[in-house]
Image (cartoon, rainbow, N blue to C red; front, side):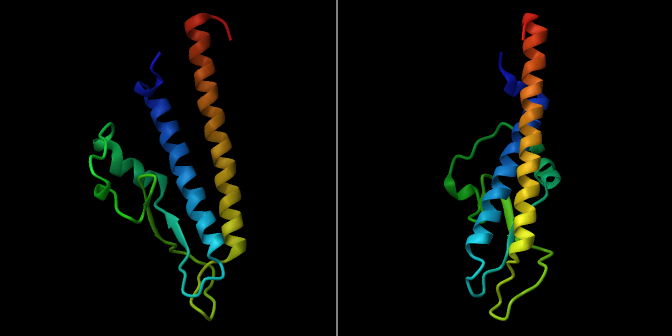
Length: 131
């Protein structure tokens, strides 16, 4: 059975990809916490990704230049709009903020993965009568 045609699985897959991109950007922020002039970054909200990609769903990139260099996994990356503070050398990474973001992202990832698995279990049960 092809699960990619069901909107629930598309949505869960998009959410997992978005969360993976957000975790990658957060780890890059943490890695650059001592880099002078580094600006903390974050990804656009998941809702923005859904609005932007809805008419393009199913299309593939034919050229690497079609995705801007600021994108991670097809998700737009931007400067963090709400950094807690900025150091004297211009770095806006606050480790406490990044650790909280990483923890929140990990929790959301676990929830999305569990929902995806439960959806699969439900379809398996409906199709076969067995779990």
